[in-house]
Length: 266
Length: 328
Image (cartoon, rainbow over all chains, first blue to last red):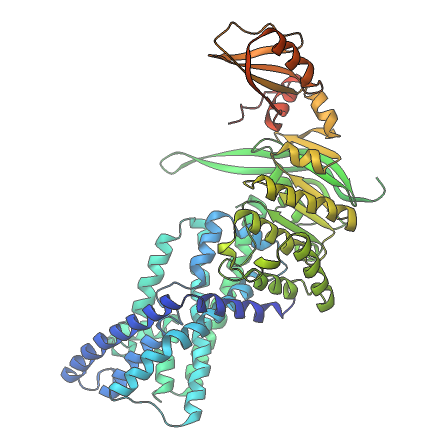
């Protein structure tokens, strides 16, 4: 499957591609900061009325908001990562060119998206997060070990995020038009990953369901790891299990899609 | 042939097309894109592969590169069955599509080359040497740090050709490499391909709509139509086989009845003072021009070369097959 050294090169390329668009990055930082402010005041009002909602106090709720804004672009919660490009290549048939390469398609796009994610975290995530922590009461840990644990949870969150979007993107082989897929991705992403409200604040069985879905591995679990609201092992197992299952499903779908192209010509 | 590099023996590709014929009703129809195709290409040969749109050119290339499996027949490239060992073959072939790019759109050209370096596991010294040679031959020196999206079509094409050759492929498939290029860019690309074939004995299979590409590069041309090979030989022979004709366009001083041209030349179209005369491609235009100029008040003239589609259309009708549709 080609040389493994190609994948770090692809990731580096993914990073630099996003780094070239500075104005877009600045606009993104601004947007995330403004949305953060709106959500913080909404949450403060909500937690004022319902103290301890979802097991969070006010400082934790605020920290949750800024974490969400910091990870928003990185996890491509509402789409906008590699999958846009992949679906376009499938639609135009350019995907055929990719098949000439001695590389694994899934690893290629994963590396590409990881590069993008690291840039988005640094370029778009850090500023709103630091601003939020300075301006509002926060529940951030002091121990370096917790931050390290959080970084690992973040890596797993990225794998799950990629795997979900890879599955959605490959559906373009059969659906041809990616618009409906992109919308489905956006709605499920915003709602199920806990971008609008922490998943543990969802009532009853709805809360249980969304917390068991893979989207929970993206924001809810890393947030709980950071704020010490969950057992580490349990969190990692949950994330890793979804990552493995979804990546494997992606491989299956990929070979079905390739077979379809190879036999039927797309 | 002893050192056949590309071998096709009775290769077929049948697509199943489903067409909507009503609500939830589908009609299945089989389309034979390639039919009993057999040919061999020797190592180091440079072959033109031509035919009208939809003739089966791309399908053939896709089968040769392994991204389509033949429905029947035997196909080997360098002794390898492409569809079974696509990745292994990928290291030994280069592919360039005139209308598609393998380059990284947002990044400088050099970044795409660094990626090829890793992707094809090219040894460092080899990579540096090849890059230097390709940059020189394709005149890419000043473009390496320019993002691909800012390159002109001709520059991008040269960039794509270099990308396809960094790993020293034994065979290069070119699909319309000069499409949309201006005269200077076309010349650069052709000069380079000629030199590549001479220096490195790279086997080249070239599909094109531009007869000049073939004239200047290929000693052998294969014509495919309706999925079948209808001609395989020298280009000169193609003109004979297709009885292809050139056209002399003359502008007279005023509207006149059709020119009485010496046979076999004849007037095929009259539009006001402008007239079109067809004559065999094998004959010189000079004699005809002299005769017309001597007897008619000539203002201006031009000679048009036959295009591939017209040659093939005529050849196909000649052979008693169904005529292909008019080229658009």
